[in-house]
Structure formats: structure tokens, C-alpha cells
Image 1 (spheres, helix red, strand yellow):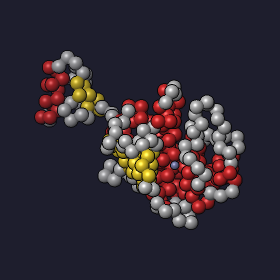
Image 2 (tube, protein in one colour):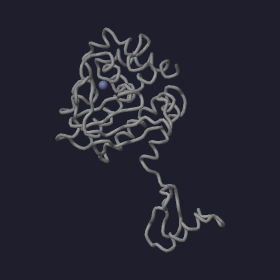
Image 3 (cartoon, protein in one colour):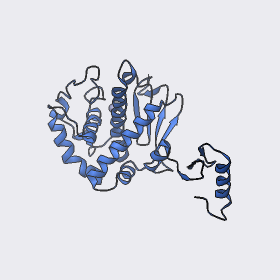
Image 4 (cartoon, rainbow, N blue to C red):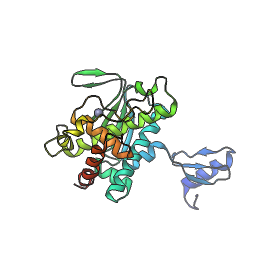
Length: 249
Ligand SMILES: [Zn+2]
């Protein structure tokens, strides 16, 4: 609210009085009604910033549903981490990824990214704990209902956050203590989730192949939402018994 003696606030108040429409003040932090009532204006970027997450565009543009999917993924992971560690979700997320406004985890929209010398123009890559590159999400956008496309995007981002979590604590070449190294036997061979929704085979299985790191990222996804196929109870047991320890280090 404008305070007497505050020149900036007074300027904002004067602007509101002269303008019958709602307006956004020049600083972008407040939105005011025509009667001069102002309140904090939240933005998606502002909310992501509280988690230490930043959206960037490099060689491609975010769609609005993709931006919202990033937020949904971050919030879902944060809540699960907060519940598990009995701390605040925002605090848990920032601790587990080592993020803040000055050192954010960046989701960068690109037209393509390189991995092991190959160029990919679709999908996502967690290059390290603070960089997730997002190319075209083709699987999620072809002939699918909007809600399903949204869920595929969210799950894809949660899967990448699983990779980023490992990379923050154990590095890009995970050592023998990393979650990747613990994934053996039944965890590798289980069939995965049944195809519940036609056309959404990869809703809960985002990673291709059966390597430990891809299995872990998909288990991280199952753990985040507590969704498991009937054949995957070993994975649930594994995550429940290990994640609490891995999160508190
Ligand atoms: Zn993956």
C-alpha cells in the first residue's frame, strides 16, 4: 500500500488513480486495481525462483503448458522430499539440489542437445545437477489429449530431476556409493508399469534401456508420485528403504 512520504509508492498510487484499468506497477512486483488497492503479483518465474529453479530459452521457446509442467514437476518432487525429510518442501528441494537464486537449477529450452557425440532434437537431458536441457517433447505432443501430454511432460521432468539429484551428490560418474550402483537383480528385470493408457507407454517409464541410471530415474518418478505397477513392488520397497537416508546424507 502507498505510504505517505514514500515517493515511489505515491507515484504508483497516482498512476492507479489516473487509470481506470487494472495496471501492473513499473517494478512488476505489484498489481493494482483502479481504486489503488495493490497486491503482490506472482509470476511462474517468481515461484520457481523460491525453489532456486530458473527457466531459460536458448534456441527454442517454452510453450505455456511446458512452463507449467516444469513448475508441477518441481513442486511434486519438493513435496515428496519435504514429506520424507519432515522439513519444508522448498527447503528440502533447495538442499537436495544445492540451489538458490544465485546458483539456480536451470531448465533450458533448446532445439537440440548433444549426448555422447550424438545430436538429439527431442527429449530432455540432465547434463548436470544445475542444467536440464529440454528439446521438443514430441512424444507428448502428437495426437494426445492435452491432459495426457501435460502428464507426460511433468513425468519427463521428474525423471530428469531424478538424474539431477544423483548428479548433485554423486557426480556425473557415480561412484560405488551412488544409487545407480545399487540397482541390480530384480530391480533391473522387472517388467515396469503396465500400459494403462493406450498411447502413453512411457508415462511411467521415461527412460529408454535398462541401465541403472535410467531405472533409478524412473524409480525416482514412481517414488515422487507413489505410483507403481503391480510387478514393481521391489522398486517401491527399494526407494522407501533408501531415499530417506539418501536425502539426509
Ligand atoms: Zn533418463
